[in-house]
Image 1 (cartoon, rainbow, N blue to C red):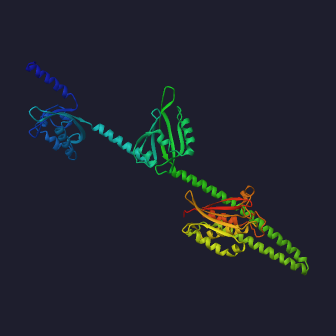
Image 2 (image 1 turned 180 degrees about the horizontal axis):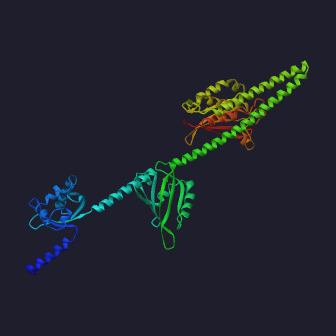
Length: 499
């Protein structure tokens, strides 16, 4: 056994060694319901700005005069839990020192039972102020970066190509309707949500963009948890490669550009509408010029002849002038109807009972229906309504019914059928007849043109289908036709229920 001098020499050596450690090292004991310090290193002067003697004499002073009031309760609780459960304690807290001011400290220690009762604590206290400041700066930087990403609707992705997994930031998950929480998922999770029409272009961009020195960019649609699609701008680059130069990891970002894309589509639609309107205006100007010029030419010719004609000839010419005048009046009336359809900005819609309005039209045409022995078949539920303009609905039903009677076949008894159904969520009315039919191979492109006729009927003006189509489209709907010569025709009207 070492003698007393040797023991003192060893203790002095360890004390010098411990005092050189910048952290505070001390041993405390809990006995008889009270804490006491039995040893502490010289570092207590720097850590708590008290002397070793002061610390040993009154350890509670540190709690009451150094630890911030807001942190005292948690400090005491952690120490108590460690003593009772004999588990290591590790706690960060703040102190206010006379000279250094506010500092962050970390206390770690190991409790052990003392023979005969009580607990001893072997403790270390470190100044972690600089570390905490760096953490706070990093946190502020991350918060700013996160805010910038969220404000720009951008999310991060990190693709481990080897493991076939992808990390997505919370903002990226939010784009598809998930919780704003980071996630690592199989790469198939995202790929399976890409719109089928965009898969090929996205895969091609990815193949080209993941080469060494290249970058990846793709615009595609992604399906959300609600089943809807949002437009994404995805950019990235490969950052790790294997020995063969094949990409093993890539990082990038997703930006939600749905609003921008919708505006782009809306602009494109507007340009298309303007183009269509310009074409209609050009056609309309041509029609006005041609038809009015024909009437004007005939009128001038007859007036020139009228000047040199005798009384008998003049009587005959007056009847011709009356016919030209009537024709001119009809032409102007038709043109007026077209102008009203083309220039009306908004037509008021209301919920109308479809069967009720059809009954009104059939009542108006009762004489014609009886005269031609027409059989009417109505397959429309009593409660079906459509969001439509009343005048337009009457006009559409009247035009199609009148045409079906006008172009009925003399070889068979006329039948007109009205059928209602729902197709892809859209209300559809079909009006079918067994009349003369139309050769669609020959007339499909001109079917709804102005002044287009397809049968030698003296009452045909070629204006009805043109006006009807314009009225249906003015309501946001569309029309389709199927027909076979000498077998009949079916017109399908698709209603747009939006206001």
